[in-house]
Length: 225
Image 1: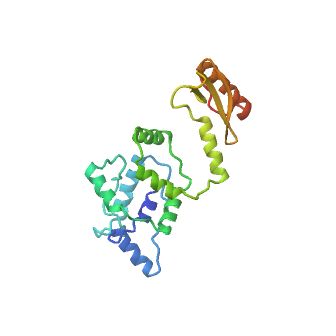
Image 2: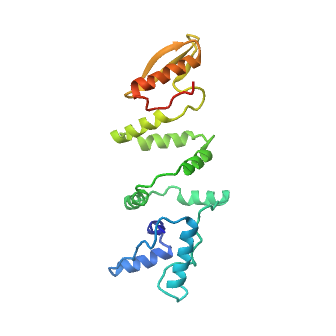
Image 3: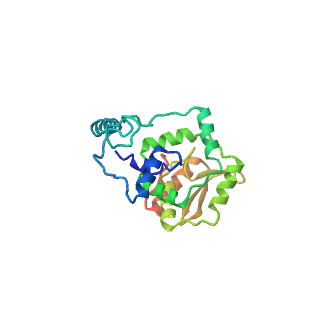
């Protein structure tokens, strides 16, 4: 049950949790945090949460010291907001910027986490067919201006591109209109290297596969030809 970090980030002025935590910290105390049990499924975690809250007791019901406002087991997984709710959330957050301390806490919460294949698949489905507006692209450009990628980031991007399948047709193969033939290219040390031209796309795909063996030691996506 590792839901505590999400509560750590709930610092809105009217937050019930914020008011209590502010009071504790004002008298030099810190909320007690500890992991009761780990590596559970969501259903198991909810069952543990309900059991612990029932055993220890909620403060608002005068049954115990816990800050919980529910009996537990009511997480937000699978929750889908309506279009109107999403619009209101967007308007509420518009123009707001996160403080450096908030960003640091977010970074700590997500540190070491990796997305599952199923999560990545769902993200891909959600974003499929979406196009960024000119305003969005402009903001991204401004935000990324002047930034340089570390060697480690460059290496990871390069590895990801090597193993990524093509969006269509054969990888590393394109049709050269001026020549009326198919050409094969491969990236070596960040530079695009022209291999040769061929009469068919299959021949060009085979040439790309050979280049994967030659330049990358076979560590990369190969066309199924």
